[in-house]
Image (cartoon, rainbow, N blue to C red):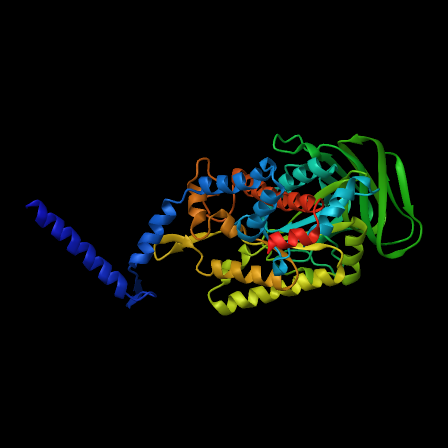
Length: 478
């Protein structure tokens, strides 16, 4: 066959296939028990674009933009750089009404943390993406390098999820209760679950052993601590807790939350607490006598809609005693398998809205930062693609956070947006696992670094603005 005939045949074939794809029903064609699908030209080109996505180059550009601030000499150029970042950069923190001063009070509290007599806590709730202290650990280390602090923060008395930062075990009469889960999960007859959404009931004697981890991926800041804090509540009379031969006693039966504190002359890397009596144990904190720590609270399978189920007074007291200044909520992914309509997207966003409003009501002195879902892929019409309603869910959660006075970090678009998860899985080394949902250790580190960089760009802008007249800065920002 002559070349021009081959070319003509090829062009006609592509035209025919394109025409069929353009008119083929988007929802498929029912043939008996089967549903036939045919990709449209847009779907073909979108898939090719996803395969070609250079996610590493995208993230490198974001990190270059976050690091260039230190090299800018001109004050005017600096403000213009920050203006562009807080308005346009994909990695920026989104603030209600685009208020670039939204975190100013938080930044001031972090700067004062080294001067206070107790640690400032930033509480990081999340689903399985943050298990093992992933993301939280990197963020904690960066904060402790800047603002001081020690230790891995608050952990439950009974820890069922391994951590790269803390080794712990227990013995004795402790029973774990958690606010969510399937029918095999033990539920309490009350709502006093504390700030970790779980507690341990003590009846008699128990010992809890905690040590910093020797894992090679554990951060330096978690390897020692100078103070241990026990959050305990609803104890019977003569409850005792002993650590390093120092015994603390609550002589009378007491409702509500109490705090027992042990200070050590020199930083330590491990300790045991012996408990005797009847009480609810809400958490044990390894921390410094000042500075900052980040508490990692992974809630596997949770969509972040459990907070309204925790007793108001109980949760309020825990947050107060822990000196919580920022609540980070990293949720959204666990909604997706059941979302099949815009109506469901709206319903999920409304459930999240109630949680944000509840936390703001009971602890108004803390800011809230909602971290949106990552990209997630599944097979649709025979091809791996982003979950159909995930982009809409991300936008709905963002708007919900902003409308309710919370900040938002758009992890979905930081990753690269639609179909970026496919590129994260294909990256060498892989940044996400073969389930096309969860980050690998390398991917979690990349996300955590990008989040930390963005947070500190906003902090650098805050420190620059302190040297300028506010009205002058306002002119530049407009």
